[in-house]
Each structure stands twice: as C-alpha cells, then as structure tokens.
Image (cartoon, rainbow, N blue to C red):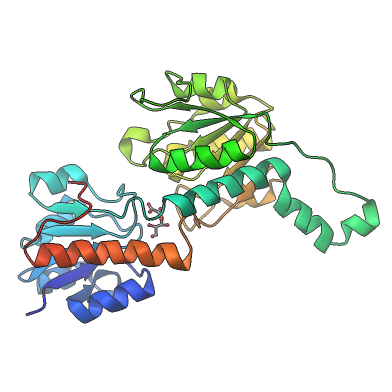
Length: 312
Ligand code: 8YV
C-alpha cells in the first residue's frame, strides 16, 4: 500500500515524478477548493512534500490529523511553522549541505556582478553604447575589500572560501560567536560598519525579519554594498529601495525578495542593483540532489527508519 502524500506546490519535475510513482500524491496547489480537498484526504494523508512558498502551519496540520512528516524541498524551512509541528509531534526534514557549493557560487557571482557591474556592462555592449560612447566606466575591485557575512553557517563558510580566493578579507556576525578564525562583530550594525560588502546568509522567518534595517544600511554607508542570498524578509525591502534610489549605499545584489516572484518594479530602474530570480541553488545537479534527499527522508520514514536530515 502506497502512503498518501500532499504536495503544496509545483516543484522540481524529476522529484515530483518519482514521488508520484512511489506514493499516492494529492496536489493541494491544484485543488479548486482547499477546504473540500483537505476534507477529502484528511483520513489518509500521512506526509507533506513541501515545495515553494505555501505556508505549512498548524491550521493545515490540523486539517490532516494523520500527518506524521513534512519533507521540505530546500534548506530554508521558514514557510513551515516548526513550533506547530513540534507540538503535534510531526517530523520536519529539509535538504541541507547538498546545495552549499552552488549557493556559494551564486553569492560570489552577486558580489562580482554588484561591484564590477558585469550585467550592466553586458547591456552597455549590446545596446551599442561601447561603439558610440567609448569604454564602460570604471568599477571597483573585490581584492582588498572586507566581506561581512551575516550568518556564518556552512553556506557562509563556502562563500568565505571563494571571497578569500578573490583577495577579500572576511568577518562575520552570528547570534553566537563561533569557533572561527574570522573576526566577530557583536551585532549587524558593527558588522556593516566594519565591512565594504555585507552578505546576508541567515535563515528567514520571524527571528530575522528586517534584521537589515536603516541603521545597518547607515553603518554600511555610501561606499558599501549589500548582497542577499538568504530570504527577502531579512532586509527591510522598502528601506533598501529608498537607500539605493538615494545612493545612500553604493549598490545591492539580490537573489531573494519579500514577495517572490513579485519584485517591486522600482527595483528594475536601479543602475546600482543586480537582481537574480532566486537562482541560488538552481542547477540541474543541485536540484536533483535536493530532491533525492527529500525523497530519501520520506522513504526512510515510511519504512519505519529514522530520517536523514531532521529539523524538528
Ligand atoms: C530553492 C532555497 O530556491 O533551499 C532553499 O532554502 O531557497 C532554494 O534552494 C528553493 O527551495 C526551491 O523551491
């Protein structure tokens, strides 16, 4: 007998195809009427495979009283209410580590593109400006600059390694000081003050909401750059937009936004921002590895074994 699973969104095609072969899958995101859908499957669903931004909260958990496990596609689990899961003894898994290198590659690309303005210089050539106006204006080097990592975990360490290869110096802030060779700053404002580029790598969720606010951007200053590979919610987005418009910081490189895939169109007009459509982990290899880990956790759980990467 196949165990019954709910998908919360459209996600990685190969992963979803495998899950559909091995489990009896019910697609919440395709239901014309969520309440009726949930009532129809409530008696049998034992697992959720979470894809995308759909909230998985106590209300959804209570609508599925036989729920045992929520397996997330992704390392970030901010769309899942972990306290609600814990209270109900529901296991939550994620997909850590397999995406570290790819996300760190994207983070370094953001730094390179933001400081060196490579996307803008590509557009300069394509629109004929090189021939018409002469060379692209000079930009600024990575070498000799300080990268302040806000959230030095495994992804942050992989970013540090790459940035050091470009001649950057590393410092960091975490809630707790780590056993790390890099200098520690006690709060985000001090980190921003001591850095040329701040890279946000914290988890999302309530605890980090608007952690990067006007005070942090003031400390970064008009020569400073901000990059975000974490979650849009960590930065006060309207404040960041204003600081970029008014050139109160030098520039920003953003892979994540508050209300994805919607990005405030005012960002599109900025010459001093580089915008990626949340491609941090988006390679064929890494997305397959993430899906394989999500599937493995579900297989292990439903064959009575402990899961591999448990969050709660
Ligand atoms: C993915 C991510 O974009 O792992 C995460 O937390 O943000 C990314 O790797 C996302 O999970 C795909 O839906």
